[in-house]
Image 1: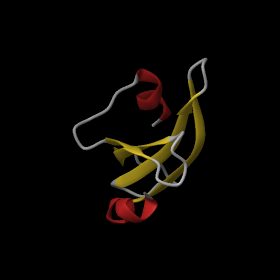
Image 2: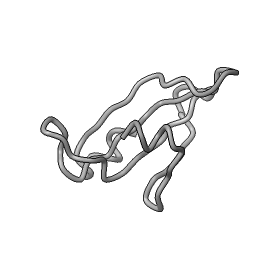
Image 3: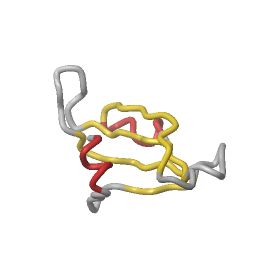
Length: 73
């Protein structure tokens, strides 16, 4: 997942959304995250990010089953 983020790779199902609670930040929604032993299959990861002048600051992230993608947002 972090490799995809580092590479700047977004796929058709991924989204970049405004953060309604903090307008200075955005939400990146990455679908079908690679499954590890502790990650649900067909997961959605939501990453809160902000530009900090030197690059991108990752504020927080959450991973859950794809069916909860709307809830995570």
